[in-house]
Figure 1 (cartoon, helix red, strand yellow):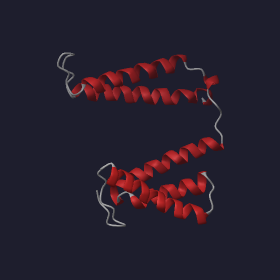
Figure 2 (tube, one colour):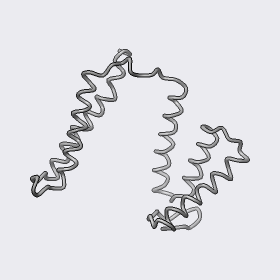
Figure 3 (cartoon, one colour):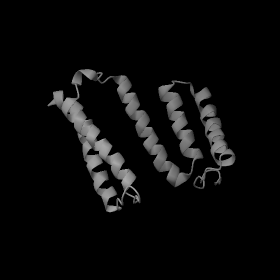
Figure 4 (cartoon, one colour):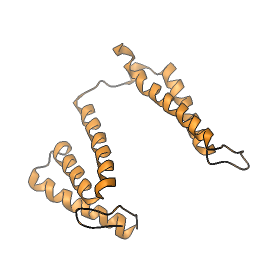
Length: 149
């Protein structure tokens, strides 16, 4: 069984692609001269499905690197991004950004607390300023500082 674990990702992508194609089809494909809202998602999902099907058949397990401690770090980084997204919607930008930057600076960059904490706070405030004030990106209201978009 473990020698076929490399087929999990293409299989999941195949299922995701088929599901996306079905949902895009329900949006109405239209025609090439008059495309419907589902045409472009259907094309992209079709390409994803085709690529996943090819990978399921011809993918070589020798192309993969073994799982290491670094792989776990990548997984933790992705998990922290997911937590950031959920918290961003609930709490605004500043607090989740400080927490994520703090985690990344401490765990991944291995910075000491005396450097990580001020960098996380200043970095979050700087990102907020750039995106909200300079670029005009609307953010949800921030419950910590009362900052809004």
